[in-house]
Amino acid sequence: MTSAPDVPPVIRDQAVNSHHGSTVDRLRDFSADWRLLILIAIAPVIGTVGAAAAWTLLHLIALFTNIAYYGRFSAAHATIEGNSLGLFAVLIPVAGCLIIGIMARYGSEKIRGHGIPEAMEAILIGRSRISAKVAVLKPISSAVSIGTGGPFGAEGPIIMTGGAFGSLFAQFFHLSNAERKTLLVAGAAAGMAATFGTPIAAMLLAVELLLFEWKPRSFVPVAIAAVVAAAWRPYLLQTGALFPMASSAALPPLGLLFAAALGIVAGLGSGLLTQMVYASEDLFARLPLHWMWWPMIGGLVVGLGGLIEPHALGVGYENISALLNGDMATTAILRLVIVKAIIWAVALGSGTSGGVLAPLLIIGGAIGALFGGLLPVGDPGLWALAGMAAMMGGTMRSPLTAMIFALELSHNMGALVPLAVACVIAHATTVLLLRRSILTEKVARRGHHVTREYVIDPFETMRVADIMAKPVDTLPAAMSIEDAVAFFTADTVRHKSYPVIEKDDRLAGMVARADVLRWRMQGWREGATLGEATAEREIITGFGDELVGQLADRMAAEDVGRVPILHRGDRKLIGLVARRDLLRVRAHARRHEVERAALLRLRPRDQQSPEVKGA
Image (cartoon, rainbow, N blue to C red; front, top):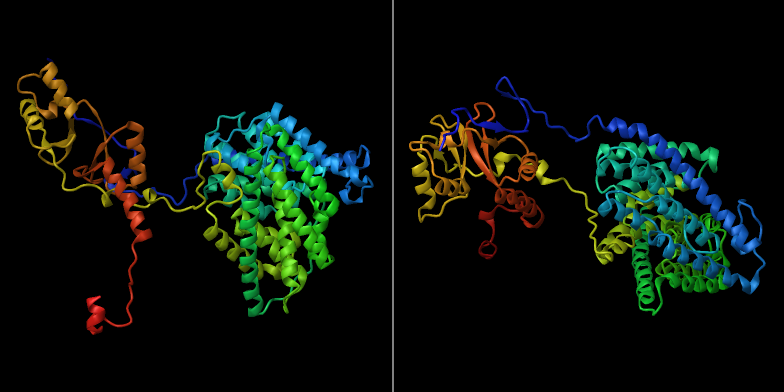
């Protein structure tokens, strides 16, 4: 058998470079590279398309409202409660929901629901791909649903539609899944920004709900798309705040306590609404009917609810304005909130197409107005605004989005502090009481788990030197193959592989049990050494000062279980990392979460009583 050529081993690493023997730290705060410029160039196009999608959907809703309730072909704004159909109005939502069931059955099932969970699912498991069929059918089905009286908001479908166009646009280019996700979310944020004139809230919604990360690579293009869409809004829809309010006076400390109490109430209401929606969905699932017919049953409930309270039908922006301006009587508020909550939960549970945001704003605003009517501080409009934001923040688990959204909707900067208090407390209430939100529950029921906590990856903060095994068990390069075979086949427990080193501790190669098995089967040249036998092999190595995540990525890509670690300056062997050593990173992070200790004491331990010392 021929021997290996007498050449030094090929040592390959992709760690931080060295320069003239000294360490050059090339680690960065962020992972963004020059490809960010490509996404930035595309973002204005996505923002424009998102704004156009919002304009189209809002006009489609008005068109179907006019056709269904007034028999006229017009896209002018029309309110449902002004119709003169009488009892026949009950059949309008039934007919609309039947159309949606047929569209979902024979078009795409993905148009069912409120849009945001579907966008989440596409991001998490669908490689951020949304089909052209969904991009067309989702806005049409939502317009039919809302235009025929569905008690939904337009924001969920607009987010889904904008995201669909962003995804479709991205699919024409050679982009990674992460880059495609960025453009999908950029389209969704653009749709929201154009609809409500809330670009900052749209950016925050992207971060809190859709991106599942906080990186410049994704945030910057999303922000640009949202700003571009908001810039188009005055030319396509309207200027100024959607629900303008005068700036509220600052609340006294007692008022902030009331805001916290309202947050708890809104949090409890969020939990109740979530349970109502999914209890309704479970009831429909037990019916001996194909799901295509469920929306029609939900539409019947909507129609009957419209007889009790016509203002509960449709998007209901007029109701939000009335609540914020204090123009609604207490009995009317009670009737609105009860009917809206019931028909919305039933209709959404039936699989009808529509959004959750506007109903949450109306229900939360009604709760806030009722709550504020009992308080000695603050005006009813302020409490209605706080209730809206708290209900949104608690139900969707997006407190930052909710508080900024309320500010941008109303331009009421004086409400900032009570909004912050109410939203944070509502968020804390729902986090403690509910395992999942109204959005993630839908995804979970399809067999996928969504983690909504963004934390620093410990693999990107720890150095290899912190987890590597040292000192390292090695074999000398001068060891003969015969001795190596005897070493591995002895009764003593051995590692799977060993670094092979020269006399000066420089790495010569790696030898494994598989090598010994091959030598025993094929033989070896008499007098051959480990250094000669391993010289021609490529070796994956690491450095003690590089990040564990970089090394873990190389180990996964090359399917290597044990990697020798070198000193960057003299390239001598200083340690070894095995797959099990990577688990130490997870264990280290876990200890920070669960281990508790009092780091400061009121009295030194030697001055404590014997009972305390014994404890």
